[in-house]
Structures are given as structure tokens and as C-alpha cells.
Image 1 (cartoon, one colour):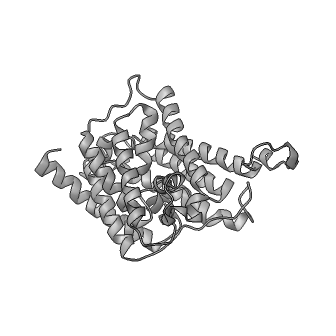
Image 2: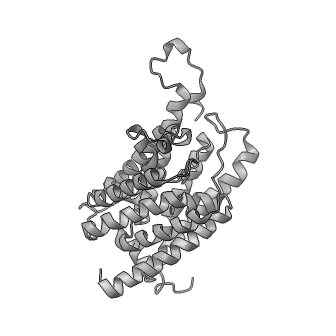
Image 3: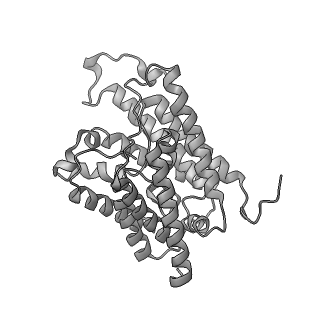
Length: 158
Length: 161
């Protein structure tokens, strides 16, 4: 195997195994239920419990809001199982500033819903469906994310 | 996985939620757990690791995305040819594939936010399970961003993803 350490300084196996596990979750959801398991829709469908505006009353949101919440709860369960049995003894602390998390989150939430997908909706489900719009979306958000992250690193130093 | 297909007489179902829905909810919880475990194992719940990918110092994210998309590709392309319907009934959904200006504008905005935080919608929730409570700031931001989109959208179609 060639020396990939400059590109993968933290190794490669946990990345590949983790990715295969994520794919198994999305694939199994499809086999069992036929659902397409992107993650960003839950942030819209959950609002349908409390917001009465027509947009949030759409059948596709209302009818999927329960399983999407269960799917999101599963994320927390799965991460907890990893942490409890394979993770560090301390909690996984995040060093990114709260304002950075919140402002970035606003753009992530607005953008993903406008684009009808995120890293999982377009990146996993869309590409696996061989959808050209998803490929365009992935290339677009990769490009703006590369640009933003590097500008942030050099200009802001954050 | 066939146990939930057992027919339960209607009078024994006390909840308004039918058995099939319970099986689907259980499936979503289990599959979400696999998703969350995978995100944790691959360290994608750590924004600093994602940012190191976006700054080209660790390309591991490509293995995560590639591995996940490949397994899903096989399932999406092959399973509907082998099975008439999902194991718990219903129909195989199709990923909503729409190309318009919103697809690109939204992706561009999403990418800017992703580049600022290193956080995307799945890992923001999953990380909470590993004690990363700071991610609640990101979850709040994403939820408000999604609310803003819904309130300002003239689009009547539901979104997928």
C-alpha cells in the first residue's frame, strides 16, 4: 500500500468503516421501509408539529415527521453507544466558538432546505440514486465550503 | 425481521398508531443508530476533523462519503429489482431529483455554512450522543434556518434530504 500519510495523517480504516456503517444504516432503512434517509428534512418536518403555515402542512412533511424524529433520535443513540463502548472516557468537547456554530448553522439549515438536501440527502442518497441535480449540488457545496473554510483559516484565523 | 409482519387483530391494537408504523419507527431508530455510530466511528461528529478535510489536511471525509454512498447505491439500485416492496410494506420511495436555481443557490449557501462550522445536519444531532452539548448551538441555528426557509418559501412542494 502506498504511503498515504500526507493525505490521511490520522489513518484510513476508521473513515472507511464508519462510512460503510452509515451506508448500511441508510440502505437498511430503504430495505425495511422504502424511506430515503437524508437528514436535513427533519429540521423542517419537526416544525410541522407547531407551525400551521401551509408550507409546513404539506403531506410529505406531516406524514414523515414521526419516523424522521425517530431516525434523528437514533443518531444520538448510535453516537452514545460508540462513546460508551469505543470512545474516550471524557465527553467529546467541541472547540468551535458558539457564535460560529450558530451562524454557520443558520446558513447550513437555510441552504440545505433550499437545495432540498445536505451532505447525506444529496451526498449519500442523491448520488446513490444517480441524480444529476445531487451531483451538481455536492460539487457546489464542496466548492463553497472549501473556499469558506480556507478563507476563515487565513483571514479570521478561526 | 419478519416478526412485525405478523397480523395483529385490530381490537388488540390500543394505540392509534398501526403496527406497520411502529415497525417503521423502530426501523428508523435502528438505522439512525447505525448512521450515528458510523458518524462517530469516522470522527465526523468532530467539526475540527471536518474542517481539516475542507482545508485539505486530511482527506478522510472522502472515504466516509464514498463508503456510505457506495453501500447505499447498491441498495437503491438492486433492492427494488429483487423485492416487490419494502419488508415492512409500502413502496420504495424515490429520491426527489429537481434541478433549478434553488438547488444550486441552496447548495452554495449550505457550503458556506458548512465551511464556517464544519457541522452539517446529521453530525450536529449525533454529536449530542457523545456529550458534545456545544452542538446545540448548531442544531438551534440549523432549525431556525430551516424555519426561515419554510416561512419565506413560495414553493408548495415538500423537500427531501
